[in-house]
Image (tube, rainbow over all chains, first blue to last red; front, side, top):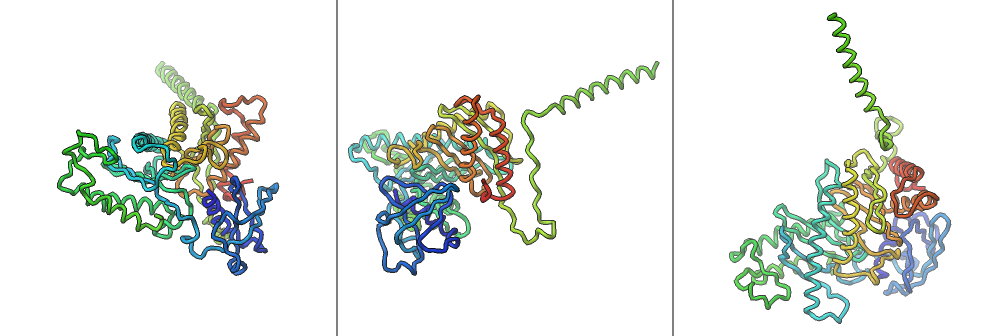
Length: 273
Length: 205
């Protein structure tokens, strides 16, 4: 997506801004500049020069890229004013894709998707099956990654897994002592991570961790665990399994207002669109 | 006679002690890293200089496209020592998890290829340690671990890829996908880490 690459570049160029004399040329040192098919790069410019030329669509600007021997790439671009606050100028796509909660044995306690998969040809039954498969993969992956980190961590540090980033999305994980794992899939937007720093000092890892911790302690424990109908180990998975007769009599999360509270909390986060 | 017996015993003990010393001083299997440069706070003329970033690199390991480990190397004094069998296990586990992470995500990149043309997978793990992985188009994964707070891991990783292609691939005796035994490569990696530790990642080249 053009948005992701452009945000990466804009963030890095901030620090190099003072090196450039003219406002039309931006130095980009490093390997991160790549041209996607059909898309162009936009560099940020001083807003004083560009008040007239504002474009809403980032990809409509043109750019020229000259790789040099030193790896420095000069980018000349047409205008896009430097956004005063990062929030309004970047993509308004959903940044949270899904949330899963697993128990210690790997059973899914709760799962929710916030963005729909792109392809339309899967029927709901296939979709549910795919989702069940994915959930098992996610749990297995979290389990194995946690062990891997334990092997690689030096003795002084506590092994923990906070986030796993792939090219497509980022997985944030929070694990409690009782083995409950909360997994949150978000988009790979670096400004989202910058916005998401609540303390303002540390990076987004802290704030995603803080948010997941809040989800566990304030929302899960309050709404589900303290519900009088709750029996640990007897939770019914609520994703499209209404035809499962064996689940009658089990505790259903829909009987609590966990989901509403969760949605309200996530939407109140600055990084949720 | 008693003196002789004592001498005999002393001789025996001396020999044992000598054997013990000899076995300890056999050349170590891998070259010891130089001791870390001490922080320069005490020297009066350095008080005004900016402190270098604390770069705590831990390990570098390289996995080939079938999942076998071709290099593992500690990069710093705080790296935990891990046995060879465990390394092999870590290498193949990481290889599978790298691919599973792309499968398990709710969205996929088009064609499952990331922006560098390589298959999508784990790029970055944060937690008790920082782990960065670079997968090339040929399927080789370069993985670098470091203590939290270390910056510029991607720059160093890219540079290690360049060193690999300069030293290991151009070595006429090196077979692809086999364990790397090129001294030039290991020396270059050590020099790179020393340079980065002392001068920061701006001086990578």
